[in-house]
Image (cartoon, rainbow, N blue to C red; front, side, top):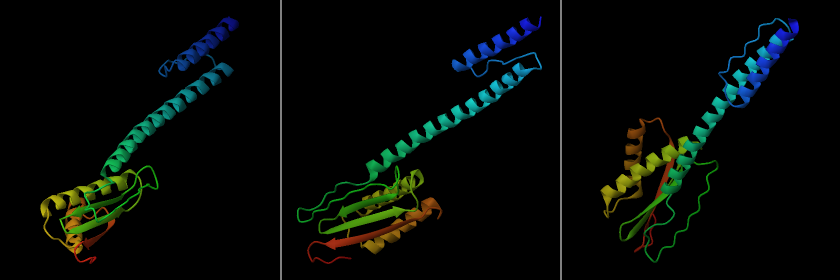
Length: 190
């Protein structure tokens, strides 16, 4: 009778091990004894809990990696690599974020006689900084559409960008932005 009870519990543990190996973490691990077999069954239950936690964390890391890759892609498309420059101006750029993605950007605007270059750096690194950068680039793109080929000074661009950015982010996001303007007729830099 004792051998049968022991054998039955060992077979239950073996069946549970096979089910766990298949990924069935809901398989009931039942042992009706008060000996070492019950201790092993309790260890199985603990192991199932740890495996569930590990799988859940792994799934979360996978989702975060997908989201981070999306932020990286957005940043790569928003960081301007070329521009519509006159033949007399040559501009080269290189960008390498400190982490998977970051909050740095640059942009330019040519109105026919003045070349304006804007460079920005959002506070921090990673997806959050990339989102701040995307917001700033959106504000700057809207500003460029509004000003068109009107002569606007860098100080005015920065003031308007600051108002738009702070208004949109409610003052919760920070970044440093600088702008310079080259007058191609006079050679002056503003």
